[in-house]
Length: 69
Image 1 (spheres, one colour):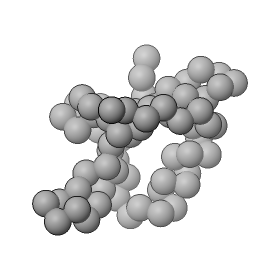
Image 2 (cartoon, one colour):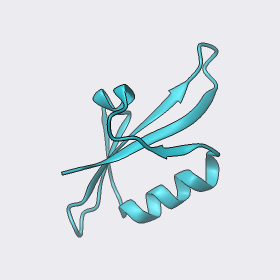
Image 3 (cartoon, helix red, strand yellow):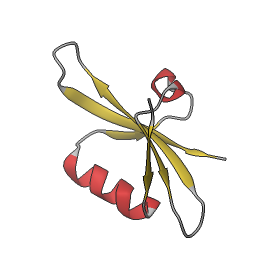
Image 4 (cartoon, one colour):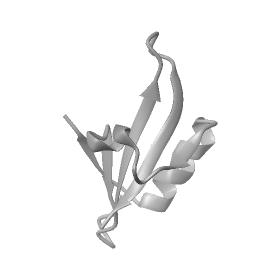
C-alpha cells in the first residue's frame, strides 16, 4: 500500500538526496507503478511518487521518483 506524505515536496526531496547517494528521476521506471510514497504539497497540490529500490538482502541501493501530473 502506498503511503501519502503531506509535506513540502522540495524539502522532502532535498532530505532524501541528503540521506541516499543515488536518487534518480526516472519517469518510465517500473518501480514507480506501485510507489512506496506519494508526497503531496498541501500548499501547491504538487505530487511526487517515490520508490526505494532494494536488493534481495534488503539493502537500499537507490531511490527513483517522478512528478505526477
